[in-house]
Length: 175
Image 1 (cartoon, rainbow, N blue to C red):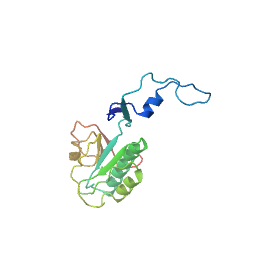
Image 2: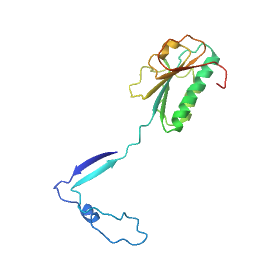
Image 3: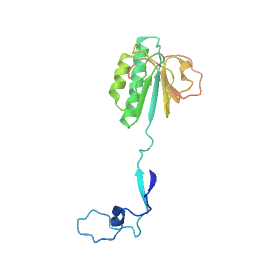
Image 4: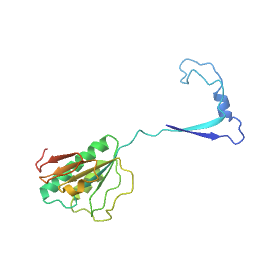
C-alpha cells in the first residue's frame, strides 16, 4: 500500500474532512466506525492498494523440435505450466525463436490456441521481450536453449551440462 499526500490549495480543511472528524452519537445498526479522529487532517491522503506480487511467467519452447512426439510433449508441458500460473492469478507469455510470441495473458485459452499451432505458428518478431520477467521457464529438447532459464524441462535423452534446475521427461503421456 502506498500513501500519497495531496496538500490543499490554501492549507485549509475541506468541508468534508472537517465534518467527518466530529464525534457523533451512534444509533443501533449504524455501520460507521465508532471512533473518530480528534484532529482533522490538514492534507488529503490518497491510498492506492497494489496487489501482492503478481507472478509473470515467460515460457520459451523449442523452436525446432526433432519429432512430432517431442513437439506434443513440449506443448503439453507448456500448457500445464501456463495453467498453473493463470489459475493462481498470474500472467503468461509463450514464445519460441522465429515465432510470434503471445501477449501477456491472464486467460489460458489464447495460450492454448498458440500451443495448438506449435511448432508451425505465425512467424513474426521473436527477439527478447523487453519486460521484467519474474520467471523464465524453457521447455526444449535442445540443451543449448537452457542458459538463461530459472528452471527447465528437457524432453528426450539430450546430454545437459548446466546449473539450471531441470526435469527430464520422455515423450509418453502422462508424465
